[in-house]
Image (cartoon, rainbow, N blue to C red):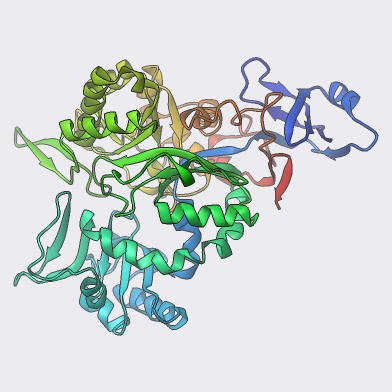
Length: 521
């Protein structure tokens, strides 16, 4: 038994929201109460941890993350902008990565944002050819929804000037019609899959270090929002080897690439197999793009559509019904207002054919919304999982008079169940940064962004703990500190409810426990 005493315990349990201490037995919460009550439960061999006034919270649950991709980033070139500021600096980073890349593997870079480069443009295949001339190489945009491929990578994917753009994707071309190497959405699929195939065999090597990084941020459970059958096998290997230090729930995508229709998956075998700290999760369907999401806006008084939409409403409805009948829960990625409109309409249609699907679908991102869409989402009663750190990471602004960007307060006031996540590495990992952004609506540069959509700190904490657990179907196991639940918890150096919201990013995670075992520091 372990007793944590002399602190503040914020349980996220409305039946008992606070305590001074808690007891852990066999990896689960045994009790929450006063110091006297908890000490009375102690056995002679109980370990007593004096919190010295620190604050205990449930471990953060990141309901939409990309743990497997982020773990492999250590093998690839960090081309984040900043600190890199030019294409020449990106080329230098790729050359260094090529020197340490084993023969036969693709060179891969990640994290660049074309708008932050001195050249104010995307790199081209020729830029990458100069840096890596002798093997395939790709450079991932920070959004992970577009990339640049060198000539060898394009050849390996069979992309030539005669190759047509796939539905839901685009290959940028120069004036002569030659591909420039810039690939959007579904057009990048084969290059992206091939670029990590070999590296994924080494996932188990880096899973433990990645787990510690997440635990340092206070994250004890994560839903990996893009796990192919091959990636699932690597997860099983890492879990069975005891290298997953936090709990991961796998969100399934097909073998053909993140953005393809996941029609090749069944619920059998590996998806129903759990290893230590590993759980099967829902099916993931990408409805629209990322950085170029599907939008409908008014320009000059006329409606205009932009971005990439992957399905017609009827096609998506058919996918949902098929998935539900194969016993899948489903997560729908939809960012733009047109993507969300298509998604909501498809769910409405699918539920008329399969009413039992109402509790087996949720909407992730929902970044650009109209009031009509908010009312339709409310009528569906589905979970919405958003990324508050996007407020912090992106510049201030809005998409038009009728469109709200990440309208947290409006969603919450409408009674829509709201959960938080990071989408890391596409967004900032730290939940405390996300909670700060939700409560202040401040960007990285300090600009205010639609401050009327801010929500209270306590509501943001709930969205990153108990609500995130419930959105993933895990609310009976984690997300709050209640007797019987897993002892997944963190110790902070200060109480987030008693500091200024501006101080939230500076709070320190002192300790992290997963199933009662300390995994950080």
